[in-house]
Image (cartoon, rainbow, N blue to C red; front, side):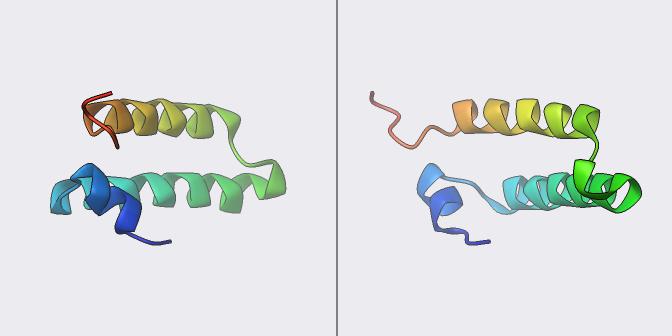
Length: 62
């Protein structure tokens, strides 16, 4: 997992900590439910990631 895409978007320490928390949520779902994961957790995290990416667009002027 690299940070260049996040820093390009302008993520700071708080955003990277939030991303780490989301990774833990998804990994915990995999640990509890095997390869099938936890669809509800994954969908919730996906929504949060999309919101974060909208807040920090790669190309803000487009």
